[in-house]
Structure formats: C-alpha cells, structure tokens
Length: 255
Image 1 (cartoon, rainbow, N blue to C red):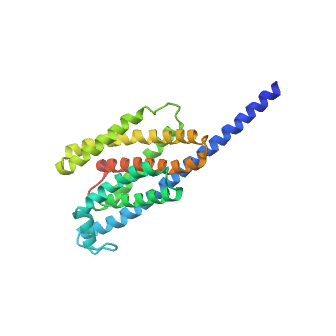
Image 2 (cartoon, rainbow, N blue to C red):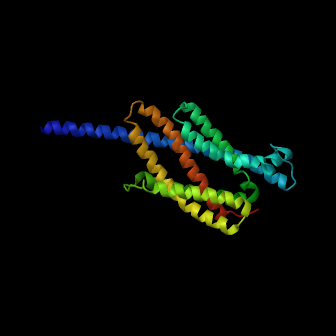
C-alpha cells in the first residue's frame, strides 16, 4: 500500500510538472508575440511621427511626402486610422477560431502596424525624452501588475465585467470629447484609464493562465492553445498601449 501511494504521488508530481512547463511555455509565447507587436508599433509610430514632426516644422521629410501626411492626418482618412484598430480587435476576437495560426499571427502584426500609425502623432506633440520615460514607467508597472496577476491565488475573475464596462465608458467619452475638446474630461478619462487598464493587466494575465489550463485538456487542446496565445498577446498588448497613452497625458512633456 505504501509503495502504491509513493508511485501515485510521483505520477501526480510528473503531471503537475508537465502542466507547469506547458504553462510557462504558453506564457513565454504570449509575451514573445506581444513584444514583437510592440516593436512593430514602435517602428511605425517613430518613422511616421518623425516625418509628421518634420512637416509641422517646415523641414523635409524622409519617408512620407507632405501630401501623404496631409491625407493621413487632415482628411477623413484620419477617422479610419483612428477606429480601424478597434474594428480589427473585434474581428480577430470573433474569427480567430476559424483562422489558421499563421494567419492570426500575421493579422495581429498588421494590427500592430496600424496601431503604430494611429499613435504616431505623439512624436510630433511630446518630447522624445518624455515618451521614453513614460514607456519605461509603463513597462515597470505592466511587469509588476502582470506578475501579480499570474502568481496571485486570489480569484479576480469578478473584475472582468466591471472593467469592460469601464472600457466602454472610456471609449464613448473619448469619442464625444473629440468634438468637445474638454481638458477636464480628458484629464478624468486619463485618470480612470490608468486605473482601469492597470486592473485589466492583472485580470487578463490571470485569465490567459486559466484559459490555457482549461483548453489543454480538450481534444486538439494544444493547437487551440496556440491560437489563444495570439489573442492573449493582443489583450496584453492593448493593456500596455492604453496604459502608456493615458500615463503619457500626465507625464508627457510637450514640444
């Protein structure tokens, strides 16, 4: 009997070790995909933003002509650039189960490039130093919040509905403020945005972890987990970008 118990415990330990190893690999993939997307966003934002800044100061541009920049930022096209990333998020969320892993990954990187275009204006408005400083602070905060969400034993799944409603409220208020141009509303939105996306960082990390533990036991679970890794990377990417943009409102030094 004692020998049976020893064998049973050893088997359970092996299974636990396999699950832990699989989960670590899954989370590494999530963070890896997110990191690549951040690089894509950063490159596009910097290149376009540098040209925009040069055009506004009357200097020659390197990559985009004045006419292209005028079309991107001073015509109705700017609304397409502004809202297209949001539409792409909803599309990927609904279609990822039908897409191949490679297509979903390429779509994610395409989204990251478009997001870089949509936020490129920050390089024309804020100093490079303040952007780098805000990015550094955001990275530290994101790492801490994500680590807490991954390691905590507390179930924070109940935060989800409250945080999502908060995001919807932020989106609606931000759209209305495009026409109102109220600094007070923008300040309130930024303050709430920091709190909401800080909470979402921890919530999404725990949710990605729990989702992997659920799907890995299903038929074709590992293949399904690969797709969920892409969508998980998208969620954390959005948390980081939004946290960065809202912090930039407080920390950014204007040109």
